[in-house]
Figure 1 (cartoon, one colour):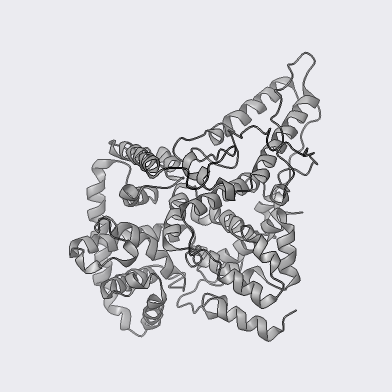
Figure 2 (spheres, one colour):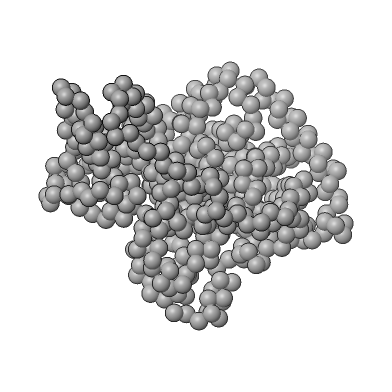
Length: 511
């Protein structure tokens, strides 16, 4: 066990984004919210009738089939990409999860099937025994896993682990280099055509756009897609130019009205903190360019002035970068955005990017503002929910952290406060936010399951650490520098599986 002094030392070393270091310029008197006390998280489970009526049973199965049909569709767009990384996915875990659900459903149907009803179809062979820690909460019933069944197991064509157009075919996954560059370019071109076709209509179908965007958005259409999915632009094409002009004019009216007050006594603390935090951001090659620094200062100061319930809080500054990078890509051709020379971008274009970034960031923060109000109740609630979720999906990791006195708040506070922008490379953050934009309340709710999957992703390394200091250092500096889209896709697939199992069953958080 480490001494109290060591724990304090490494609490400070991990991040400046800890509760004690955040100075709130404005504050609303909201006490911390405890999900254990909140009644809506603990709903009584309705009792299932022991002798169901036949008609009601048929209706229940029809509803089950209707509600899950889209989750089983295999999309042609993403199978190749995700198959490239399928070796890294614990196939036994995912297949065992699906087979347990099917077995339990078949057993329940068999017990209640009326005389003369046809037998249910035979289920596919089970995957070989493996690590079942992640399926504990899906089904507690024991399942036999015969030896030597791996070679005979049929490929899982439908999986509840993934949403529409994001299914992984787990059988016969190719080597990572098996797909040629021409095949990848054809796939990317096909996806881009689908986006362009969807965006070209007079009224964009936002629901279809969300389904298509879940598995990633092509770079040429990412900016317009983010603006649509965030609610900044209307679905109607004819209304968009007027909306952009009006919102940009409104933003620069705020600049004219408020920005000169940044040195006033009442606002100078806010501006000083923003001015200190921006040079600490990454990527430095982009952020430290004078024009970019000025843009970020204006965006953050205006947002803080217009949202006095929270004001500016450290961590909000990191949420500006992904929007700015995506929107500036419309004007820099093939140049890498994280090191682009912004002085080459026309002034009018920079003004458009600045206004668009401000409004889209505001839309995001509207959904998670309780993360930044006084005492940050939103983050406290999410960290507690994450701790309970991990205790259900991987009890060994949860117990290991507790044995070494590592508290979740010490490393997951930053995950919630900065939405993993400090844990992942910028390219991975942008890809992650493609899915967040397409998920209902992705930043507010789906992020919890991403964090749970992210933690369990490092279980091997976590369990190997036997020292408080080394364990905390590892969790605060996870080795993701070489991550790419495939790693993010696998992370999102596992997060969706967890959401499927837990989101509509909050009582499952409890043991």
